[in-house]
Image (tube, rainbow, N blue to C red; front, side):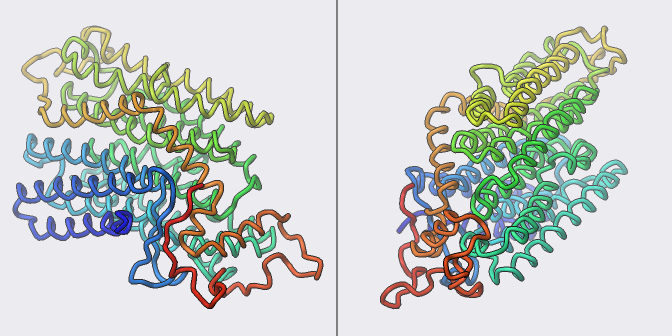
Length: 562
């Protein structure tokens, strides 16, 4: 049995764990054990999924034995399995951090009993989004993680959190509504929401209809990914939440939006129809985000703006539609999930140790806690792209891809990317110089906790250990950058080729049909005046009747290597 056939458990296990922890509301110790155990088991499963597709190939798992495009299909390939492993590893570290914080604080301001079910539902939603083989199931994954995030964001019920939660909920509902409208339009135009099926049938539509559907989906995903100008909500929402919640939001939620953009751009809308607008968005996201970061005095708000800024690098790699650019995006997403989450956990430790996250009131942290200084310095330099760390390697790949493309817009984004990297270093160095390097007496408005040893907060060992583990994972991305770049490039080849994905879900005939549509100019007509592929009714499954009357969906669902 192919281990990838167990992919549904990546969604089912966290949901089951959420149900169990909800029943254990009054037994906090049991809740913690179940939560950590379920996330650890899910991570082990996902490592197995990654190993099963590491060498190439795509596996489609139809739920309930419904032959695609009917029913729900989960698809495991190198990109989705990489995202699953990184997201669950980060989630496990954040959960350990949160549990330790809750124990130390007596669950006053940190995680409370409802935290564990909500956190597990969020993980289930993220996993479902990464594995979704159809647009509606992708929507369901988004709604699962967003519903859980509404609860997590307002934990504690403070005025600031409720106010930020209202903004976050309104923006999330609007983006979900736009996504749902886009799904309805796609279904009305093609008669399907299965992404492999859409990869074939969208080629039969007029160019105008394709562009309309393309833009609608990009807007919905762009809000979730927090690209400019749709990122206004993020810096005001994330910093108000408890440290572990902010960390997992920063690491995962926007990356699910980026994942959806990558998947739909490569599978449903191949080519360069909107590449220039995407590059403009990438450039503005980089620049506006980092300028916002430089204006901040609160570390968590500064990190929220750098989060927005670095989404621009990922969009840039996607917009180039090249193997190098897309492979660099895949690698950079893994890097950014790990490093950004690490920095938010460090910000939580700073706030706990010194009593504030305002750099105007901080000073002397390097002397007060050398370990905390080290935990900040490594991911901060990684985010800034200092050689030879993973942030540098990912940006270098993007720069090489942009130079190779050579268009004026691509070169402009390359220049902006280099400048933004230097400004990121400036922002990170500013925090280091003011919060860690200078003495507490030199702070503009020193916090009493810095000056009075008896008022300094403690840092539980498990919180420090979880943070150190994530910092170590960020360093591991550098140490193992070679094989990770190889699998990222293989994933990029698979996504740009599309054949392994379509063949795994619908069979080789559908993949050939999709390739034939792509090889002809959009909207061109065949000699008989018939649109390409119009001999196949929109409501019919591509390749549903193979020679001999056999249904391709009944064939083994592992695609050929690219």
